[in-house]
Length: 249
Ligand SMILES: [Zn+2]
Ligand SMILES: [Zn+2]
Image 1 (cartoon, rainbow, N blue to C red):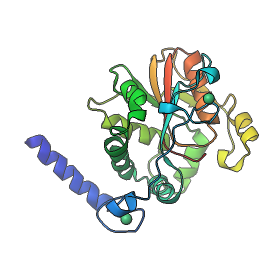
Image 2 (spheres, rainbow, N blue to C red):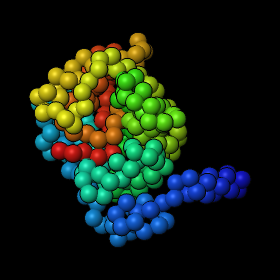
Image 3 (tube, protein in one colour):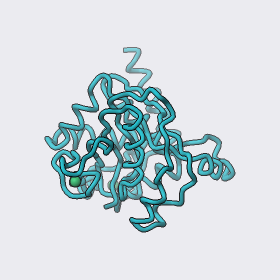
């Protein structure tokens, strides 16, 4: 009983802090209203290496090596309403919206759809831990000068929300460090992106958990995710699944 009340207090507080408006039509009360949710496009799942269709998002056998990610789940297309939602989450640090949208993805999409079974099984395993793509100091500094009081890494915040969705709370661990300055991936060609992130990350710890979910906000060419998975696996991870809110290819 007590727990329930606290939950309600917290929900009310969050409503005051982050009034909810539909990202599609602006209607108050919910982030994505019933009628707008019909226009959301769920993604076809793809192999994170070649970008071609793959049932369940598993990396094709022919595409995988010891150091590639084992699969990828990106829930939505990065377009229309979801693009608006993600830009708002990042621009306003509105991670409450991220959590609600992810809860919905798990309940309405992933639990109902057999394609997500491989990922969900892995996600729910007791010793699967969650980690995230690192940002470098420079990006954080820019945010401070624009009077952002807290230093946020979007991938980390999304990882924390993902961890809360699990029936038993999952651990989120910071395992990667950004060790090279990179240009904005969105400004580069596919070839340049690969070069840009090469050697940009390092595993911070000698003791990397064997089972990991690697979180980022948007999957574009996958160069960042592949580079991060590579570093995690070279440092001891055995299985790494990528997870992003959306995908833009
Ligand atoms: Zn709406
Ligand atoms: Zn493939």
